[in-house]
Length: 373
Ligand code: G6P
Image (tube, rainbow, N blue to C red; front, side, top):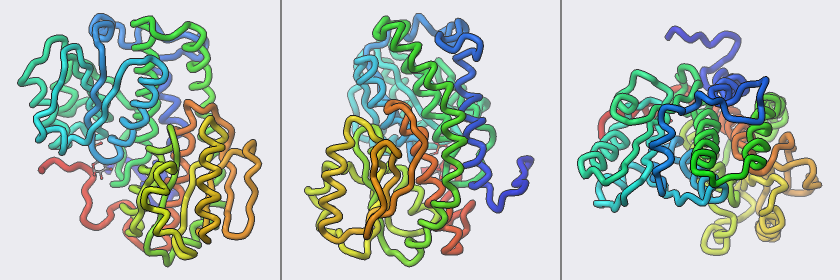
């Protein structure tokens, strides 16, 4: 590999630490630091006519890239009112799905070579619905996916070597937000004020991501509780639900502990039956519009002797107590919080995996890029 691990023990850790720069680089594609409240004129300029005509969005992806798509669904619908569906490529391609006219198909893929994602795209293109626009959100400019789509939106993560995706994910989120803003702007579905507020908040991410890396030490301490666990639950609501899914995926991929991500509001419909004193429950708990509801969910778990590991904002005034561990995540606006809250779940999985002595960068049975079905 031309990329070097440098001072880091694993590529994954190095890539976790590269995120403030990688995300900032990705954002700079669309925003100038000397004009931070407007989109750059040249951002996706060639494609404005295409983006103007789309009436809905279909995201197709696999693995971690699929989780980025789930966040985009919340963003597209709440910020622009453009309907957005998200599906894993391996299901989408085999169920004879309906793709209506004027759909923007977004294929999210770090590698741009994932077999299922490519096949799903090719199937849609064969049926040529009117006004179809395809977009590759991809980290590899020379990939098949980029060659076969109308629009290329790059993530500027740089080469990602660890099999478990980290900086590719957060740069995908950043780029998806830029795309949401661009669609909102060209279709006049967002006020200038809303647009400039979000653009300015995007600029703050670099500092917030940098600050969240300081959580490395407290999270390492927290991770000791997970070493001998068999199973783990990750909970979140709203924009944090996909991050709960991603946290669970990271933990299972590299530490081989069974983990499940759940929308906290679904607790009562099943997972509450699993709660006992042995199963750790990780909660993504920024002080957002869902916080009070989430707090009630945490109380349900606590009352059943579950041990909670909470990533919260200091503003939430959550404090550690018996069977409740709290790590404060830097303040960030609700909309962009999923990008920042990705960091603690990555660090937690990383430290648990290291403690359990797994092959962090090359977990058993997994491949960086799944180019065959
Ligand atoms: C593999 C990798 C994951 C990745 C997924 C999708 O499973 O191990 O980290 O999220 O493929 O890959 P892609 O390159 O399409 O994003």
